[in-house]
Amino acid sequence: MKPRPRARKPHHKTSPLQALLAATALTLALYLIPHAQLLAWPLILISTVVHELGHGLSALLLGGRFVALYVWPDASGRALYIADFGRIGHALVAAGGLLGPSLLASALFAAGRHPQSARRALGIAAVVLLAVELIWVRNVFGAIFIGLLIVMLGLLARRASPLAAQIGVVFLAVQLALSVFSRSDYLFMRSAVTAAGVGPSDTGQIAAALYLPYWFWGGLIAMASLMLLWHGLRTFAAALKR
Image 1 (cartoon, helix red, strand yellow):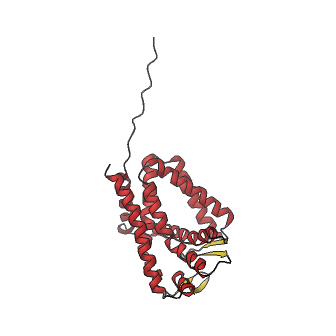
Image 2 (cartoon, one colour; image 1 turned 30 degrees about the horizontal axis):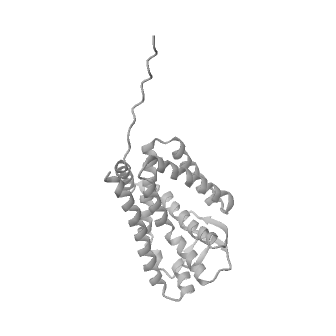
């Protein structure tokens, strides 16, 4: 008597539309449900981490040395680097932080089209942040927050269902995209206040290096950010049509 073949578990196909709708619903809940805004604080901190990593990794790519990363509870941060490149190099490092959130949001939208690429993106993010934690993070709060973020991303990458992984990636992409707009006033400030004190803003540093007014560079960075987001959204929208 031949053994019966095992019944296969039903395969639930996921779609980018499901992920987008779920990510949008979660985002709306953060702003519409009373006291849910408290949950938005870690999301703001994530955009700070991405912003500061944009500075540090830009310096590293240009041949400098990324020395330290700080993230504070007021959602400010600082990336320290040592480099001997000229004015253009320092301006590019300043711009790297400003473009970091929109660049990563665009990449996450692209990854969020498929469950497999979404899971891979979560795993890569966890590994990169672990390296950041071990090499560059220098303050206790930053170490704790990034450590928790590593655990969350790692669990989503390893344990989450395909749809949950996809929702997680698209949700992060939406939050980073929103941070580009919610924190856009920083682009048009000459100076900035952080937990380390008052100093020139990123656009102020670009202006000091390249001479044109800080608001000119703020407008240019804003347009570049919008182009990056548009590219990511177009890539994601193409998957909705399939």
